Length: 156
Image (cartoon, rainbow, N blue to C red; front, top):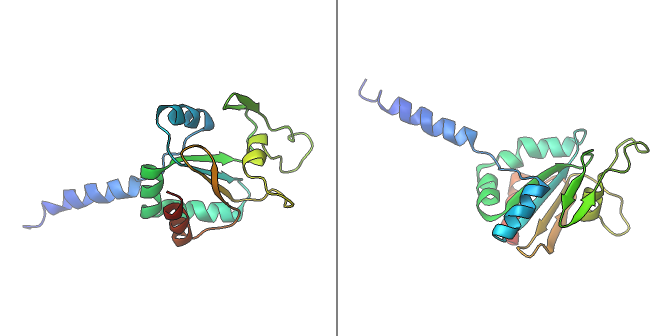
């Protein structure tokens, strides 16, 4: 009975911990934030059919340390690479011009930022930029929580 007062405290702390999540930005929001305060950028391209993307969403992006690092040290953008919307970013307009011709149409912005020489576009695609929006690193595979932490700590 004397510990009954701790129950609400534990409930409050547990619910706050459970509700912690990454504040994913759109490219439009990113552009505004970068003008206000330059900061490193983490961009994650995914698709609804991508099994490894779903697995990272369930594990790596739910990890408390990953969430803290992305929230504190980076601007984080998450975009479906097959998005159909037009995106205006850095004075340019990007569209998905493959909607009518490809089974898995890839948005121009995803292709531009996550391209590799001599290799086809693949998902998941993770791109890290420094505060001047210069590419630091690109990863094109599933990352465990530990590998994601290594990447983020190295890139800060």
